[in-house]
Image (cartoon, rainbow, N blue to C red; front, top):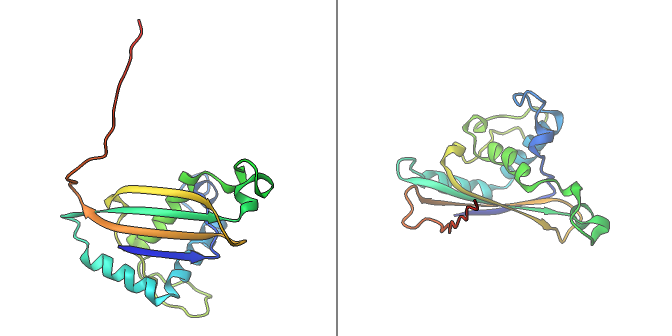
Length: 174
């Protein structure tokens, strides 16, 4: 299992991350990609965890379970800092896509960002997101006045012994 938290990185939603064509990243999307990946790569403990998980992952046998914890300042997530949930916090499902792409897409593995203090080759999970079988996200109030992103990733069997239950009871009225 991999488990880490990245402080002071504000997530970018899919809506703000791409231009209308959904092929070219906006300035916000590129800024988020650089901040997220460079922050991770500045922490050797996170890189070691990622490398350990990827070395054990076998696409013939495994899938991934991923959980995201998007921590936001209370003034962003709640109206007036304590009321109902605010639109400023965004839709949690829109925060998942770019984060997943940047953390897992093999095309970012080895990428070098220009104009950074220590230009190094980026390390990410290097596992295509097609192997993610279970993904969950939580939008939570932060204890700090800045955004943070928590990430947990587990290797699971691609054929689970037990499937999540889904009780379907349909009533048709004529």
